[in-house]
Length: 421
RNA sequence: CGGGGCGGCGUAUGACGGCAGUACGCCUGCUUUGGGAGCAGGUAGACCGAGUUCGACUCUCGGCGCCCCGACCA
Image 1 (tube, protein in one colour):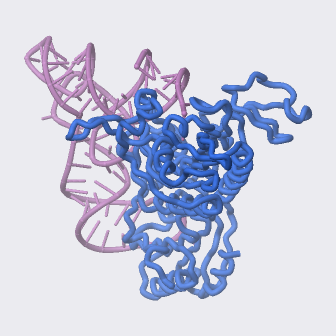
Image 2 (cartoon, helix red, strand yellow):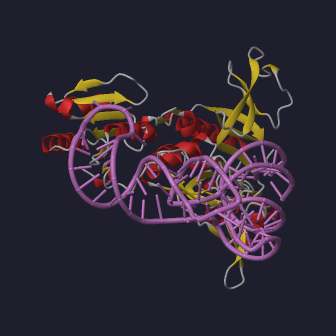
Image 3 (cartoon, protein in one colour):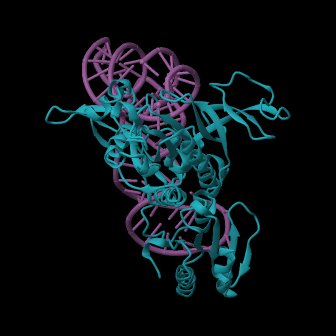
């Protein structure tokens, strides 16, 4: 069915691209996303997702959700937390630097969650009490707040952002290991589906784990240094790497290379770091009590969008992979205002919409062809369809993929099949 | 948090210790219509505070904000 939401007329959309790149941004993703009007910066590290950006975000989330639903159920935890929950693990003090903490009107200490291990452990206490309750996993897609000392690089490091965080609970390490491997596969699938090649990278475990794994996308804008063997795929974060170059320590064949990586996801074996202090325990078959073994798995949604922008563009603008593009088709009506042409273009639009294709229809009157073309290149929708006097004369439309030079004339009825192929 | 840069119509910029200009945008009208159209008219701007000065958008100091480098990064 035709859903108003799936397609839009540009003349009425809350959208205005900018002629120039913003002068105070250096990061490619910030330049392109701001100029293309996908996002609007409210303050450093805090952005409005405008309609185009919102749609990309929805696509990204849908892919994440699709893969995560195979690993556990979704729920939603609050962003506002009481101090007591964080005091249980000592992190009210420990995370003062990154956690927004303040007093409510009643004088109570509260904070905005930078992460949710404490909260989920508290919730899990009510669910888990026996080995028969394990393993379990649960995830959410939720807003996190981090008082970053230095937000930077557009969407790559924000103060308020969406994170998918998955938590798993196990009775023993064998169960944890097994589940951990499943998550690895799911993560690779998530990134691959949105056109990103992520290297599974060994990293430090931070506060509460000896080791963790990060998913690194190679990009100039990446703030992490990673040693990578292109032959076998071995990767290790430079912060923990003892070797700096030379033969790969894993396969012994390839050479280790230094690359910049953007960390789009990470997975941690938490062990009992959170379950123990919170009292999240279970009874085994013999009636003995043990702390639950936990792991957490995160993906930064806006950072992913920024990463895609960093890796999918040319000098004219963005080039969205189809899976996350805000629309599949950008339909441009160019040339003089003319009733016949307008009707023809409207019909092309309606037909595509009826066939379930998401179309952004640039029906703006009085906007030059050149400006529409430039906007289409900037916004980066995968397929560009042009309707003009020329094409109308032959009852055809002109189709071109973003990034390719050659356009071809096809009949409107052939469009949907072409785009869906 | 240390260091650096920047702060002017909605956007991007030029000049300047002495009436704040240009381009784009936006509004009116006419023309135009396949790679950011033309003409005419119009609209709209100095981050905040203190100091120096006859006079500060301009110089000095402080604050705030943004960007960049570094540190930090569950």
